[in-house]
Image (cartoon, rainbow, N blue to C red; front, side, top):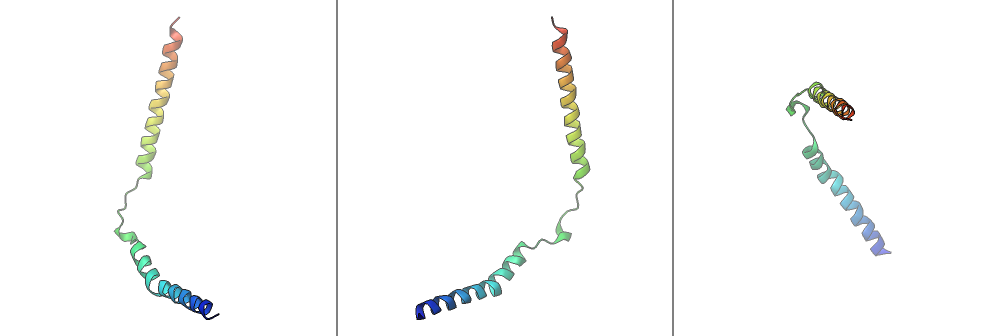
Length: 72
């Protein structure tokens, strides 16, 4: 019975050590300062790029379809 209680005490001590020492350090390392991130608006250029590629693909498909239908 003593070994089980010792194991429970050791486990509790490890959990407390994690909560008290490790977790705050991990939170500090993981925390990202929002002001340090560059403010780059990527939605509009990304939309323009995707739309441009879609337009080029559609024009190519139309051109290839018309090119193949003209041959006998």
